[in-house]
Amino acid sequence: MVKRSILKRFLALLYPERCCCCGRPIICGKLICEACRPKLKLIKPPVCSFCACMVQHCRCNKRQRHTNSCAAPFYFEGAAQSAIYRLKFKGKACAAEIFCLAMAHTVRREYADIDFDCIVPVPLSRDALRKRRYNQSAVLAKGLADLLDIPYAELLNKQQTTIPQRELPAYRRSGNVLGVFDATDGVPEGGSVLLVDDTVTTGSTLDECAKILKLYGAQAVYAVTATVSRLSNQSL
Image (cartoon, rainbow, N blue to C red; front, side, top):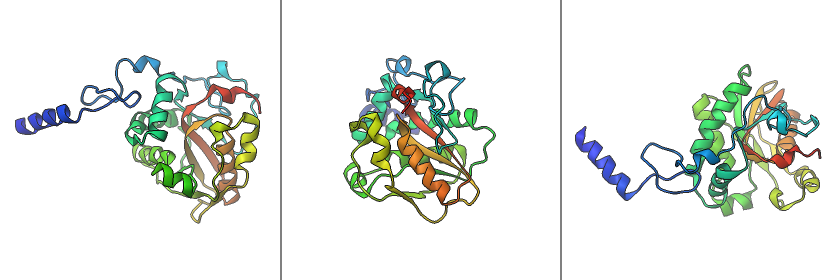
């Protein structure tokens, strides 16, 4: 036991654990450094079920969507924004860990009475997956599935490459994803699906995915994302 402890400490010196948000070395067993922790902008209840923002920040006018509800643990700001960047564009899948834990807490709080049949990630196109090497939404969904003990299923595919939503003004985002998703066999007939993505701004991508899942038989589609942008407060 003592030898294992010494070996673990030695390996920690050679390969120190790093903060999920900024990448700085941290104390073994920690996920986030002390500098980044206060920079996480938590979303606390009461929460708007339409845009996932705190009610005092909501200006979405409860715009109806195909998703039954949307929730997220953090705003896309500060340390959480940095962690999303590391996850999506720096190949740091380890940055997903803090999000998975926070998303699990959010699901238990906001969807406590929902019995989910499966957890489904928002898909990437083949070209995007080839460039990025992994789907960050799938990484989050798999981690969440393990924490919540809910089956993981890849039921959606993206049939064509689109302009990244972040590069488009809000009014063009809905049209950019219109008709680009399709579903595979296995959508639970009359069931409830938990749809997972890394962040939500206007909600157009989640909305289109939820529409397809319902067309293929799902009764309800609830969404959870790691972060939500306050830009989504704008009625679009």
